[in-house]
Image (cartoon, rainbow, N blue to C red):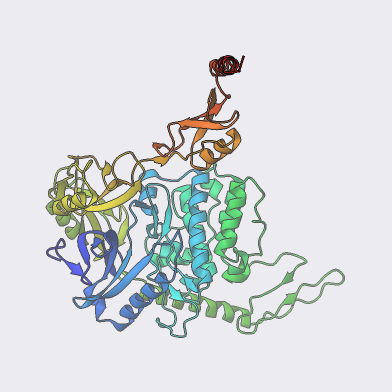
Length: 589
C-alpha cells in the first residue's frame, strides 16, 4: 500500500504501519476511529482473495476466534471485505512474541517456562471446549505483553471440530513442521491432543533453547516427529527438574493415548509442579504400537507382528523337545515392503502439501545483518533467494541497514525460497509531544497530528479530572510513526468527604470513618453542649475533602468545664441571697 497512513478499512480502521507478516496475510497496527483504540488489522494477501478455499478458511478463522473470549486469547472484534480482499480486526497486544523472546534470551528458567505454558494451555483448553483446535501452536503465535500477560493468537489454521464441511482435501497438512504432531505429519485427522503435542514441543524449546527435532527441510523434520524419540530434556539442560521433564516428555509421546487427555490436564500437572506437589506424569504405554516399528523378539516371549496384511501373533516354543522351526511365511516381508511403500508415499504427499517446499536445491543462507539494504538484497538474490524486506526502527543504527534476518545465516534453505530481512527505517520516526498537563481530547489531537496512537489509562490523582498526568514515552523521544503512546489520565482527586459523626459514640464514629476510607484517633475535650462520651467534632471537619486513607482525629466530650460549674454555683448562691434580702425588705413590720 502506497500510503498506509491514510488507508481506511471498513470506514473506521486507519492503518498506520505493518507489524507482522504471516503465511497468508499482513498484520497492521491500526486505529479504530469509532471506539478510539489501537487494533491489529490482518489483511489477506490479494492473490488469496480470489481463492474460494482460502477466503472460506479466512472467514472461518474470524467466526471461530470471535467466539473465543478468554484472557489468554487475542480477541477478534470485526471482519469484512475491502478493496478486493478480506480483513480481520483483532485486539492489539503490545509486546514481543515468544519466538522473539527465545531469540533474544535463549532458554528460559524452568519456573518461567512452566508459567507461560500454563497460560497457553489454558487458552487451548478453552478453545477445545468450544470446538476449536488451533493446529499451529508455536512460539510465533504466542504474544507476551510488557506485564507478562500471555496471549495466543492466529487461529488461521484452526477449524471447528463440529463442522460438517471439510475445508481441505484429504491428506492435506497444515501447520509448521517444527511443531507438528505425529498425526499431523501423517496427514491424519487430529483432535485436541494434537495441540497438546505441539505445546509440548514449545515447552521443550523453552526449557532447552531449541525444539526437539530439526532438519534441512520440513519433510525430514516431520519424519522425525513420526519415527524418532526426542532427547531427554535434562540431557540438553541439566538444570530442569525431573518432574518438569516428565511433564514435557508425556506431552511429547507419539501415541495420542499416552499424552495428556486435554490441555487442561497438562496445565493442571504444571500447576502441581509449580506448587511443589507430585505430578501425574509416569511410565507410558510402549510407543512401538503407534510408530509401527518392528522390534526384534526376545527369547521366551510372544512375538506380535503389526497387523499389516493379515499377519498373525506367533508364540515362541517353551521348554521340552526342540520343535522344528516353523516355515517362514512370505507375508511378513511383503508387509514390511508395503509399509515402506506407504511411508514413502506419505512423505511424498507431505512434501507436496507443505508450504514453500519444492524440489529445489538446498542453499546456505548468507549473513546480511548490518549490511545496507541494496547490498544485502544483491547477496541474497545472487545466492538464489527471494527477498522480503520489513521496516523496523533502531535509533542506534543507520537508516537502511539490515537489523535481522529470517532464516538466520548459515542455515540451508531451498533455492528460490524467501528470506525476510528487517531494515532500519529511521526516517519513519516522529517526536513525541509534551502531553502532561493537557486535557485528554487535546492530547489525542496532538498525537494524531504527529502520526501517533493514544492509549489512555485512568488513575486517581489530585489533578483535575481528564488531565494527563503521565506519558510513556517521555516528551521529545523519537518513535516510529504509528507507535502507541501510553497516557495516564486523572479520574480526579484521591480523596473522600469526611462524614459527620458528631454526637455518636467513639466506636460508632470510628466505624463510620473506616467505611469511608479513613483511619481514626481519639482526643478528649470539654463541652458544655455535648454529653460526656459523645463525639463533639472531627479534624478535618465534617463535609470537607480529605485524602483517602488519612487519619481523622475524633474529639470526644469530657463533660462541662470545672470553671463553668463553679461560676454557675456562685451565681445561684448570690441570687438566693439577693432574693431573701429583697423578700425580707418587703415584709410588713
